Amino acid sequence: METDILNALKEVPAFEDIADQPLRWMAEQGEIITLNPGDYLFKRGEPADHMYVMLKGTLQLKLPQGNQLRDVSLLEKGDISGVLPYSRMKEAGAFGVATSETLVFSLHKDHFKEMETRSHALVQALVSVMTSRTRDYTRQQQQNDKMMALGKLSAGLAHELNNPASAIIRCSASLKKHLHNTPESFKQVISIRLTSEQVDQVNDILFAKINSQETIALSMLERNNQEDEIAEWLEDQGMEDAYDIAETFVSFGITIADMEEVEEITKRQHLPPILGWIQNVLNTERLVNEIEQASTRISNLVQSVKTYSHMDRAIDKELITLHSGIDSTLTMLSHKLKEKNIQVVKEYDEGPAKVKAFVSELNQVWTNLIDNAIDALDKNGTLKISSRSIGDRVEIKVTDNGSGIPPDILDHIFEPFFTTKAIGQGTGLGLDIAKKILDQHQASISVDSKPGATVFKVSFTAV
Image (cartoon, rainbow, N blue to C red; front, side, top):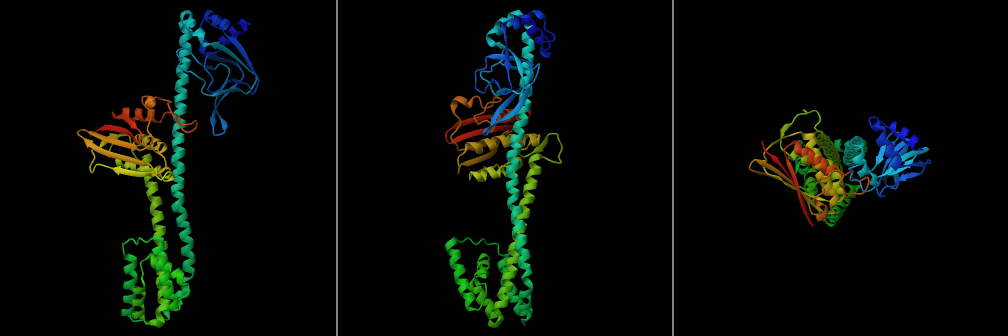
């Protein structure tokens, strides 16, 4: 049996340069585990105290996602898993379930010390496996982190684009319906005989209201009262759809005094068609304004995406101010900010010094810091972002008034794979990536946290 195990171990690529003697020793210390499809070799959270070498079959590694297990990797013949020499692994990080008839060689970690004295080459081979495994896992987790961030940004962007797009569709349909009713109103208007002077006077009243830049702030009760008063006045003049007209007039600040002035200019018998024409003009103005605002919102969002992703720009470092990247990141994450009704306070220096940076990479830093702050905040929380120039340094602070980071984990938050978030909500690489990006920019990052004030400070050298 030991000869069979030895021959199987000799076929493992990681052991191809290892002499027979240390492999024979290892075969004598270990055991063979036979698994049927559906059997678990290990489960997430169990103590990691064995090294596993796949001799036959396949083992699927799974991680929880929601109420299900998601496939993350597949171990096949020749692959090595479990705890390895010098590994700091304490517990299994995933579920390992056989997907076919599987044979696994298992060696307890208690034998690692003796392995070191018997064969340096064998230990080195296993350390090389561990290094490759860590590198591959890190690369995969970094990709997962990017995809999770992209998913969050895409969901928020889709939501932000959907609102103005829906507004355009709604207003376009209303405008089309409104214009279909215009010919009938036009017939009534052209039958009126007014002097050029009278027309100019009515137009002056109308376009004074359209061009007014004042925002009419009314409570619901005040608006209802004004609409009722205007509707009653219009009904007294024989106007149909008085309440629809009143709603439009109140929105543009037209008062009973304005209508009485129109009545005086045009004579009473011409009042209904002229007021109807005024309402048509105002409705058209309102719908066109709403379409313009929605289109501008979409244009601004697209520009924010281009700024954030740094599309159509050079890949070298550029001389930039930091505010544009932060602002575009806030736009990309605005959906999450709105969900929690988070107040954003920006305290920017009037003229911050510029820095040389890879813009798209730097935006990853702002995304990680701001997204983490949002996650840490309760509803109605406050996120403050400030900038200031101090000598030859430019300093950015991202502050949230959440519950704070516990002191016992504060020293670990920049470590790779360290996360306090639930499975599927974070990879533990966000702050590690942010720190590596800032290292490339000769910038520093630090954190200070207490209940009600967590501050991430990023400091650059000014150019």
